[in-house]
Image (cartoon, rainbow, N blue to C red; front, top):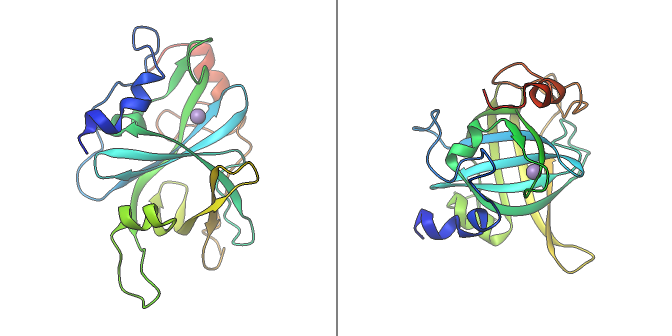
Length: 202
Ligand code: MN
């Protein structure tokens, strides 16, 4: 599918005359391995946005409590619309009244290794594994390292939801989500409050 089509939902929700979010395009960090980003979004409800590059978009989930470094934690991940690759650079304030109004920081980002395989242990195309509802990958971020899995299930409301779970031993790499209000941007070192006070994208 062309980028235009894959981002139709994303663009339909936003007025680019008002929000400084990107309408499309690539990240300055692009090229090479697929990218991931975890943003903290102080919207109506505080949440983490977990995004994995698949081809020319960022597949996205809203994770209320953020990724955990503890393999015993199952973190709810609610799928949201595909975002443009350039979104991994977005940090700033989405105006009140606009879709997702509130402050966003880039908490962590980097690359990931797709690890999805079938029951016989053979590698499976990553996009296909997501379509089938179970994908595994290893994150190489500044804060997050190690293997995670995303698994789809049917929620109580009948809508699809996913679980984001850390795989393997937590160990010293068991970096989980921090208190979102104390967390700092991996891009600019700022907290949500500082970004909100600055008011504009840096
Ligand atoms: Mn969000």
